[in-house]
Image 1 (cartoon, one colour):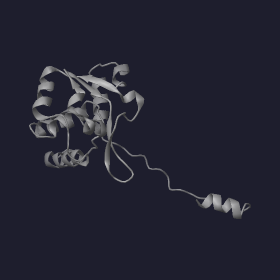
Image 2: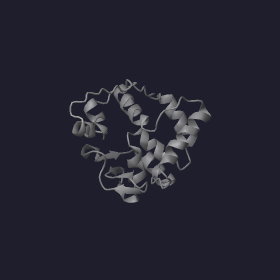
Image 3: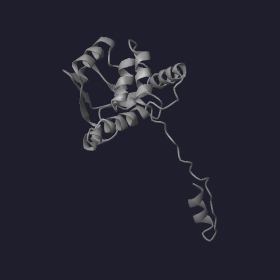
Image 4: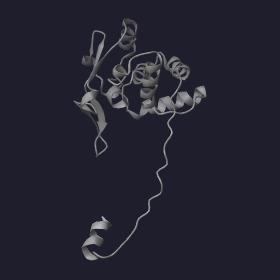
Length: 171
């Protein structure tokens, strides 16, 4: 705001703004043992399926937008996102963050049975997923990481077990 005002009223005025240097953030990617421990801890609760889906490279917005009709046989259709509007209400957008984010994930029969048993539609406030993850990390003595870091875990683990990058990038 101040720059255009100064240009208009004092065109010959010279000013310099120095911003603090941007400090790079180092994110922590959990190990398979840590992810397994977290999932074992929440197994049988309403958090098990949503956290497992996050481990399968789904965003929180995608997990929270799931509805019963999104599961067809063993295939979960990822086609929408639950987002917060400027007035702080939550809505379902019938499109994902990017056009490439529209995808299908096919699961084994055993996991689909668990999804149907525990429920894969997370109806609580989206922040509860992060809150629960933090509580479990504290309880198990696991270094804190963000829910989104489970997407990074997926990419690194999939790469480590030999899945070609072109398929990993589609998730």
